[in-house]
Image (tube, rainbow, N blue to C red; front, top):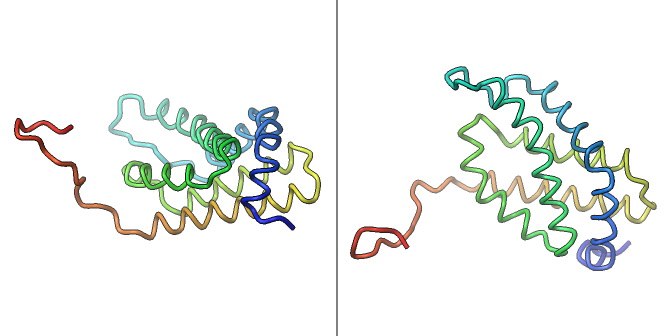
Length: 161
């Protein structure tokens, strides 16, 4: 079996195209699983649009992840995922999202991808390795302590650059 990096370089764009061709089936499957498994996730009764916001979150979250996977495959770099999760982890926590929610979404995405995209055995095995690599990134990012402040230099006039 090829190393993941070699497989990404050789097959990333082809796999990205195959996943894109089944985007709606994959993302709808994940959306349904999110809504069914986590019915209170991202629901804030103090919001005027609480239900609409929650439904939008269920709909868009798998599509955002799909776009990240697309970029990862096209650029052949796991760094895309790591940077996105490092940026997003403090943000999604505000909405009650925890590590297990992200783990579930990744697993469901790759299960749906295997169900809806015909992959040869080598690509299937590599997709499993890709999912495992993403889960490890999430584990590392969510284990790091959250920053207490953003270290942004302040100019003499008091404005941030």
